[in-house]
Amino acid sequence: MGTPAFKIIRNGNEIRTGRRGMLMLEVLDAAMSENTASSAAARYASTIMPRMGRGRTLVIGFGKASAGMYRGVSEVMKDSIDMASIIVPVGSRSDIQDGRIQVFLAPHPFPDKRTVDASHRLISMCSGLTQEDNVIVLVSGGGSSLFEIPAQGISIEDETDLTRCLMDAGADIFQLNRIRQAMSTVKGGKLARFLQPAKVFGLMISDVPGDRMEFIASGPLSPSSISIDDIRNIEDAFTGCKAMIESMLIHLILEPPEESLFRNVTNNLVLKNSDIVSSAVSKLRESGIEVVNLGSGLTGEVQSFAENLHAVLAAIYSLRGYGFWFTAGGETTSRVVGNGRGGRNQELALRFGLLEKSKGTDFAFLSAGSDGIDGNSDCMGGIIDSETVNTIDAAEARNAIESSDSSTFLKRHGLAIYSGPTGNNVSDIILGYYGGGYWVD
Image 1 (cartoon, rainbow, N blue to C red):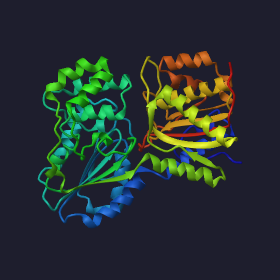
Image 2: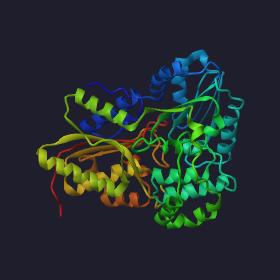
Image 3: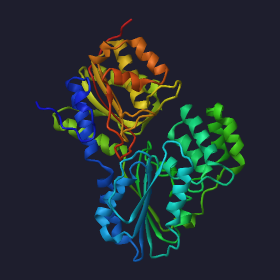
């Protein structure tokens, strides 16, 4: 058997793992390679062309996948595009050779003045639109921080401070994006005001469990109403951030945009987490492996998620009586409790590994972020199995978790997965094998 040729994962042949782990890495790489932002956007671009008006065609976009999406759209529409403008994260590989497009850089996950400047410039390109003009809007995860113009009375610094507070406290994507919608003049459907009266076609790549469009990049083209009860519930859940929310309360925008703004708006979901999970299932089955697909859209705090996942796998094993492979997808949350380097995927791999180690389980486990960036680290995720977990010190591993330093630990032991930014973003992918085990006192 030759050395695998990875397209997405850069350190695949350097990771310290066995035969099962190598198969998981190959499957992840293949599933992501056949579900790119470019190919997904190209498929949908061909379907909207017959519905477009005869005027100008503008393309705007924001998010981790917007550069790839533009490549796909431009390959299909070719000379039909008049102008384009996208906002991508600082450090992204966005080497688009196209004189029609402006590429702006903004920080992620926390916006700053660059975000606001780029957002104003993107919107200014859409002035003077007519009913015969077309605007194609490329929306993907990460867009919440890359595209933003705050409501009057709220500074971008205030917004960043609150976002950081909520993220560090473990707020999920729905709680975060509810607040972001209320603080914004372009989220929660409010972008539609700037694109009237043109025909608007939203192409969206989902990083949100359940694929609800009003939460993808905080729903720039999906009207969303936010009640004061929604705000109070978030305050009650994260009391450490309550004072910040209260200071902005008078400036929050809670009413949805008028329905008439969306008569010419069509939103299209072009790629989602379940697409890559399904591809992973197919790749495993092509190898003659029976797979249990636990589904997409899974959520939860990392520690409880690991415990619940173990309980589910153990229950399946007790019914089957033999080991099995499994897949899953979604987005967990992780509370930041230290100054280390890590993210939810690496913490999940480490927590799950320690849990199975304590139970003597025969297992292999991988968790990775489809965008290639896990938390504040430069890694994609982590991988661990019943052999490698026995070579690490459990107390040292727990200390790494308690310091939010899972990435440093996994790197040191050759268990971190590195890809760099992938130009895609459909939440997280989990692959694994569960072979049963026993309780250890």
